[in-house]
Length: 138
Image (cartoon, rainbow, N blue to C red; front, side, top):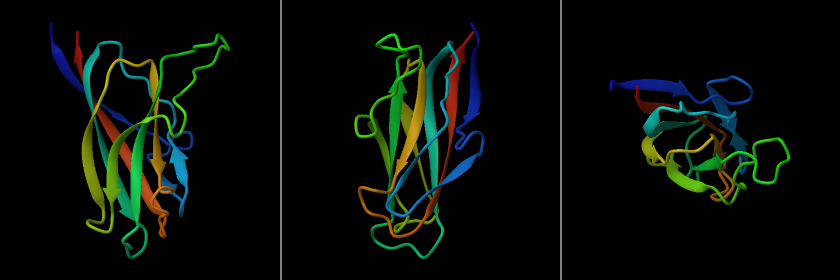
């Protein structure tokens, strides 16, 4: 059984490799499906402040999982915005751009990433991006 490594770009707004987390706002990625043979995954985040970083210019990165369709409505349903799993705090005041890697729990049917600048009430727009590295067996 071969073990391979595969990189998946997280996309935002229907295909863009990055998104701007607005001042005191949030943005959610497009849906991502990990390969069925994935047994381990990490996500690498980047947050790039578009101005001179202030002390409150931090973005929280949340994992919004979907196990599919719990109530039979025929659409995937994701964790609520405040019910997801916090993966990272991206502090652009300390480093700009700020980069961090976090483990992703597997398996899930699909997932989304939520970049949240609301909790710290960011004063600058922050461009976020991410890539997932999967280890697959096959």
